[in-house]
Image 1 (cartoon, rainbow, N blue to C red):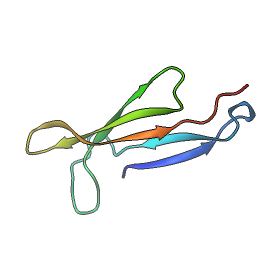
Image 2: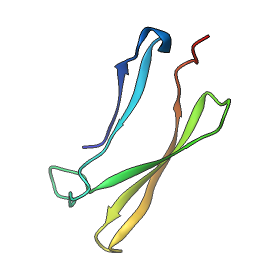
Image 3: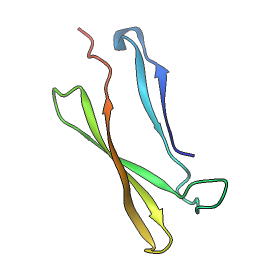
Length: 79
C-alpha cells in the first residue's frame, strides 16, 4: 500500500530522508489493497518542499488519473 516514510540519512544530510512508497505497477484495486500508483515529484531549486502529484490507476477510465496532491518537506541542505 502507499505510504510516506523517512529513512535516516548520512551525517551530512542532518536528519531523515523522505521516502515515498507506492503499490506495485500491476496492482488492481481490491478490498485489501490499493490500485497501482506513481508519484510525480516536482522540485524547485532553493525551495524546502517539493510538489507531489499522486497518479492512481482507474479501472473505469483504463488509465492513470490524479488522485491527490501534497507538498513534501525536504531535509535542510548540508552547510
